[in-house]
Length: 175
Image (cartoon, rainbow, N blue to C red):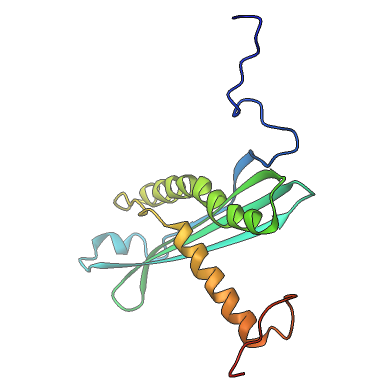
């Protein structure tokens, strides 16, 4: 048995098949502000939270992409008093080879953010607690649903002003 190489398909992928790897995960930018401290610690108003989520993808070379997942969490008290503002840009460099354009787009839009999100979640929670506020845990995010919505919006945008951008696409409108 020891003379035979051990391979279950996952350990030794075909050199010409699709390959995905996580090269590096890092915090690109982080910020925490508590503009009303220490006065906000005595407020007895129900806090309102607003989360803003964004993602950027940059091609670094033929097989490497940087994906940046940005989260901004703003906690306000009443109408206009900001208790805190936490911003994190969590980034990763991912190696992707052998994928067609649609699969590449899907992986960059769903799989990569799913890998980065637990890091963002931890950093945001640590910042808020270090700022003197009660612990806060971001809820899970369905990146597949967000990606599907972005595909729908892209298709709608192309249908409105495509002007033949896609070869072989059907005309839009009341033809």
